[in-house]
Image 1: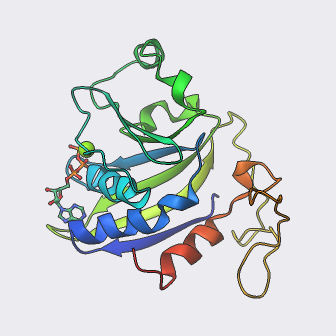
Image 2 (image 1 turned 120 degrees about the vertical axis):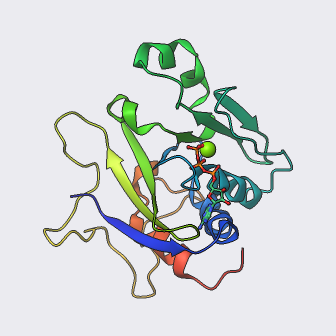
Length: 200
Ligand SMILES: Nc1ncnc2c1ncn2[C@@H]1O[C@H](COP(=O)(O)OP(=O)(O)OP(=O)(O)O)[C@@H](O)[C@H]1O
Ligand SMILES: [Mg+2]
């Protein structure tokens, strides 16, 4: 079972604010699959996410263009919508994978090709009523054997060390990056950012 947690949003502004708050948790090379029905709030989430990375580019739904790039000071955001793509070969032929390593990638309707990704963050949007959405965050390992890249305790919590103040005890390089692979970031850290008081 993957570690996951949920948060409720009661308006499109709240969905934007949630995305804005957590955007800096993600790095170039991260694939984030946004899952949920039509009108669930996936594109609103991308609007907030892009604002959180200080991009001045306008977010629009790539349902017909398939992919949009938004520039930020640190990395490009690659916003993909696979609603109209039915086969994984079609997706590969788009050549978008060449940009994955250098971009933070947000993929609407990407779950149908999830097994194609080694590892990805999954953000699922459930429609409760006109204005309420339950947004659930998890990290998934797409490997066919179903094993997780994260060690997990039998109670579903992470076995990664955490300091008593809730921060990770992972060593950091002098340039501020972790010497651990990107996937060592935990859902617990993401949850802490989300529940924190920092204004977005
Ligand atoms: N809590 C909420 N969060 C986000 N959107 C909300 C919320 N409540 C109502 N809405 C409405 O739901 C719609 C969400 O639209 P959005 O384009 O983000 O959906 P989507 O998941 O990207 O859909 P699609 O699959 O068609 O691309 C908007 O009309 C928005 O006003
Ligand atoms: Mg959309």
